[in-house]
Length: 539
Image (cartoon, rainbow, N blue to C red; front, side):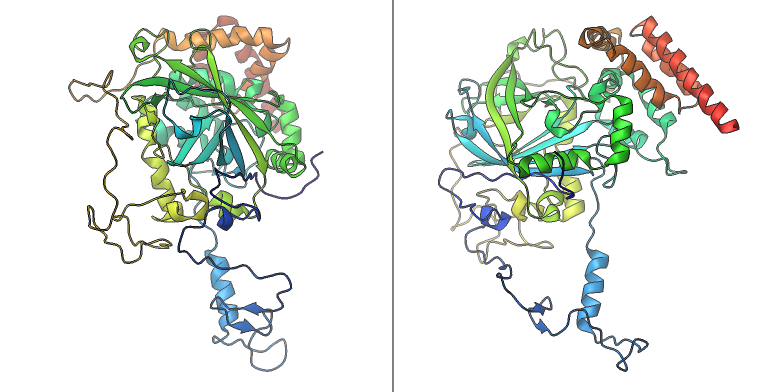
């Protein structure tokens, strides 16, 4: 089934209402701004190579040297040799600090249900309407060359090319996040990365972080169940984790969380299956996705919304602004409104996947952020990391370019592709569009948005309620299958046995707040593995 040995991603092309011809499948055909003159690729049958300036080269593999023999000294005036060596030493760009290992694809979002009573989103204003998108799926903690199927969270990013701008969704494989206090994010990242001394993954640091930030236990319950090792990206449900807002021009809004249910069915691996698969094929999830699309087995997800009325937010059974909590479907039923299908692979990984840039701040009319502190802080670093990786003009790259973009004050900078010619670089000006009607694109809402209070330096505290959902999930595991609780205990022990004794004891105490039997089982299994490792070392 998985026969392709290509290190790549998924891509899908779709037409948007008579706008774009994507027949050749190239990004330049998909995103060619008016007035541009994109460089043409060599036609079939091209029979010579050139320097970067187009000058023909007689022999691109030859080198200028003293004497017609192997031992001759080389000449600095060999322009081709100097250029190709310079290029290869500069062709790598900084990898993402998180989500570095990823696969990408083009696809389409189809509106399947009318939810215009909730939002004015233009790409949802007609049942059957199709909107092109690009998706990038990734692990979180690993580096760019790490294995796909290790135990880790998964990130799912979507860029919708709507007629009112690019809307980016940056979602998660788990229904909740690890933290709810934004200032903890650097420590969260570092605790999952390599040790600054040994440059090895450090189980002591990982568990020590969560022992001292116990609000993340809800996430850990998912991570160390078999859900933490999905078979591949295609078999994973996807969650917004944060609360957003569906908005309307009148100022009305609804709070919303988004859930994408895989149409392929959820499929996970046990710890031992994961270990075997990683040893056989470290790129399995990437290969599986690419191969499925390549043979026409297009993966899809049904898209749902969980709707919360603003007046009900304060009385919700869980804090809807707490990203460490899952919204119960019993209280907030899933409302279907769309389907995402990925149907075409990219032609060039670097251009289309590595240079893709997703931002929570890429909003469009009808969609907005809420007061969720994690979503608030995510507005800044996503764009900033892209500026570091790709430069200030990364929105002009073909994969990131919207159908329409105009702001005369955004000018110049490195690698500027579209600089608006001789148009004035200030606003307002005699030659630019007038300000749009305020009511047409109003993004702020009047109700439930009046904030009065003192500025405080606030950090949330862990309470007994933080263990309610983890306790419920532990009980649910028993209903999911006879081995699921046992698998969880083994998965935790396999990781925790690498931590030092003090951290292990603190972790047992953490699990005891969920269930005493769970804590005892984790302790017995973990200490048994520690003893085995000690005996193996002595042998």
